[in-house]
Image (cartoon, rainbow, N blue to C red; front, side, top):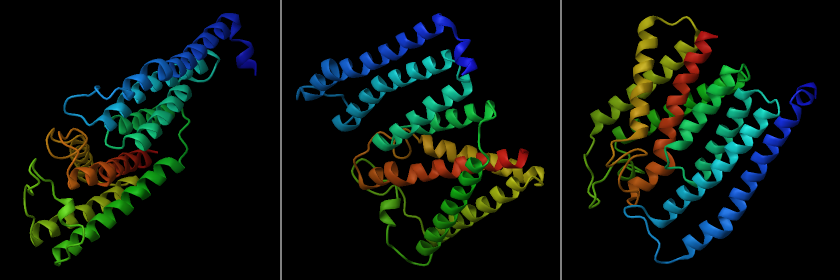
Length: 264
């Protein structure tokens, strides 16, 4: 309460203006601009289906309001790191639910967690949970690749990127599947080793390289995989948006959590 009492009338006025602007921006913008625009059958966005395009525009509009509210909270005395983290984490959750195949949610999530860490607000359970999630995902993915290496085919074709005409880009054999499973197992072991805090330099370097590779895989090649892929209509693309790329993000965050825990 003492913090709020020291804000002064100017801070209260500025915060009130920002909150009112945020409410007006979202409510009036939704009623007068977004809904009429999306109701018009002539509206389109070249190369992007209407559903995802509408989600992007609506999200960008309302997330602007959200960050104005976060700025108002900072004006009223909330720590800047905490206000920033709150806005970023809410934004990450909204985008993840509404448009999982968009690159912004991992960046919002990383920004929110980094803001918490910068202000000393990050609970230790968060990196521990991320580390555990990364380990579980790596183990399950390794098991799936071993299953495919041994001849199993459930989910196999859906996990292979396809070209624009729906043809698989490659046909991984038992050796490739085995090597991927081995790499995932090594990745899980490296996370645990680095998180322990007594790892060798080469283990930290290897995990850093793996995290960078995972980040690049999540961003994608601009054509077939990741957030940046050109088409989201094929069976693989839909699975990639819904499952594969988010799981790659989980693995990358698990590696970052290992470094955080190892440095604590």
